[in-house]
Image 1 (cartoon, rainbow, N blue to C red):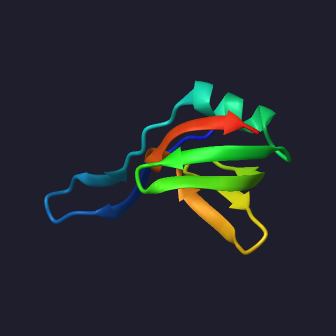
Image 2 (cartoon, rainbow, N blue to C red; image 1 turned 135 degrees about the vertical axis):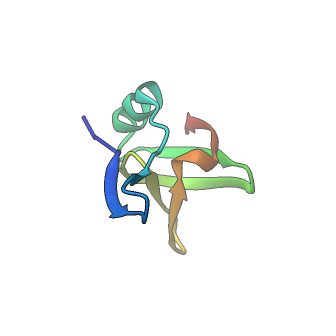
Image 3 (cartoon, rainbow, N blue to C red; image 1 turned 135 degrees about the horizontal axis):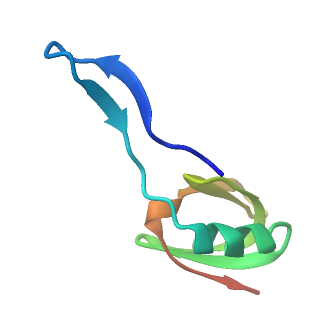
Length: 82
């Protein structure tokens, strides 16, 4: 679905520098199924309660009454529908 190995810079030795990110297809499938629903997202810094507005391979956005939170997928501990 998403290819995340980008060669964006050559080093002085002729090698490539690559961006590599872990991708969890099961988490992404779960997040996609919860789009538009109220969820609780537990992160390493605490929980966020709100509507799951978007889910990308590297982050999700959760809309609360006060603000929209953009949470890195690597920081997610668990997700639960409300």
